[in-house]
Length: 243
Ligand SMILES: [Zn+2]
Ligand SMILES: [Zn+2]
Image 1 (cartoon, helix red, strand yellow):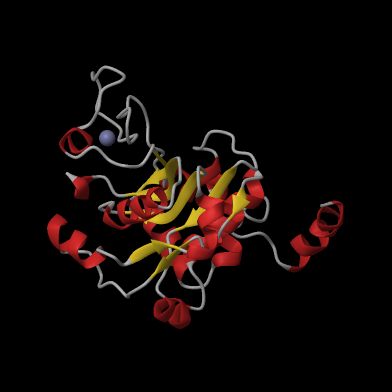
Image 2 (image 1 turned 60 degrees about the vertical axis):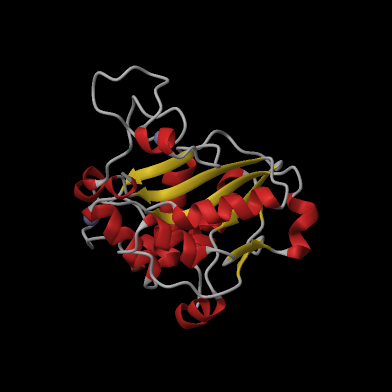
């Protein structure tokens, strides 16, 4: 990276660093301004021992949240960089609509900070997009985050380990049962990645974790393919919807 840091002063002169979210001037490239930083909410503790859902004050550690009690999840933990709010929503929308080069490294850095240290024994797998949607948008924002996360952590990237075999409707507004039905058979492990997935420790990457229906379908597909452990890493977690 010696070359790129040598060029930094030149880049700063030509393109003064700006906050990628609001455009305010910042000290260096790639960071948010103070105001936007303070708009992000990092999930706190105490939290559910299974899924990391933050509890209110006064709840003992090692407790398990109601949704995990009612329906024990198949994943091995959720590491959310932020809670979904106005600021994280704007960041995700910008990432989706083309600001990926400016934003993917920043968002991935925040995600990596919430994960245990990873090494090359871990596999990073993004939630897949159906190829029609991929074709329309040009890229999968979760794959962009996965790529950056692999670069930051030293874990291996398996961008095509999961595939969408059929397009799924937007899940917002559907009940839990209807979501499951819409997703049934939609996501599978790529047969060519079978050997890689057997016994693997996987970090499943999603930009926004909403109901968990899509990520659950991914976790199930990975475990069916023999993955030993699947931890979910997301940039923004929506909390109320799963309740
Ligand atoms: Zn800003
Ligand atoms: Zn939980």
